[in-house]
Structures are given as C-alpha cells and as structure tokens.
Picture (cartoon, rainbow, N blue to C red):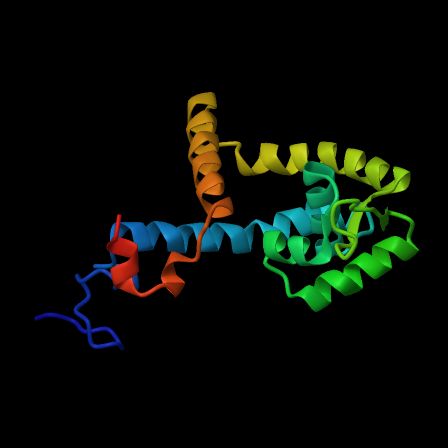
Length: 177
C-alpha cells in the first residue's frame, strides 16, 4: 500500500523543485538573484547598522568610494534603486556631511556627487566590517573556490556593465552579425 501526503504525492516521491526542468542558465540567474537578495541582510546587520547607516546610504557610499564621482541617475542604474530613493539618500548623506557636490566641467548639466572627507572616512570604516561579513559568508570556501567565484563574478559584472538592452530589440536584429 502506498501512503499519500496531503498534496497527493506518494511518500517516496521527492518534493518538486520549482526549478526542475528549467534551463540551466535561467536556474543560474535565479540563484544569482537570490544571492543578491539575501546578501543584503548580512550587509545591513554587519556593516550598515554598526555604522549607523541605512542600507541605501551604505550602497551609495560604497559606490562612490569604489567608482568616484557619480550623478544620481548613474547611482540609480548601478544600484538598481529608483531615482527618487537615490535622490533622497543623497540629500540625507549631504546633510550628514558624507557626500558633497562634484563638478563636471565637460557637462555642466550633469550633477555628480563625491565622498566628502567624512564620507571617505566612513568608506574606510566599512572595509573592515565588510571583511568580517565576507569571512563569515565564505567560511566554507577554500582559496581555489574563492578565486573561481571571484573570476566568474568579474566576468559577469563586465558583461552586465556593457549590457546593451538586447532584450529590448526584436529577435531578428539580435541575430544579424
């Protein structure tokens, strides 16, 4: 006699994974999306909160510290955050003295921001906190796994920064060499 579970499956049948039968690349993308979502919690608890920063404020400080001067719309694109949220965060960070307006001599309409001296000090304080979070997250990774993961992430980031909105174009125009 075969026992049935509440869902109607036999007891010997493993639970269905929503990703069963999904293209391997699509499944990898879903894993990447999960990773991006779940890494926010350790970053909030381990880095943003101890520095008395909101998560969006921390992300702006990290972006400016890593990339240099950026305009609000550029931060919005990099971070995947709506422009209004970036604008509000920039105003708050400016009031706290962590960012200051920059100047683009080639394009006077572009309004970039950069880290102030206090903002650079905040960025510098975030590095040890991020190192501790990373030690915990990568505890099971040996140096080879870390290197492989970092190389793969670098290649993916390079492709993403060069994204040309291929999905916005009709399929025929993508196939033309």
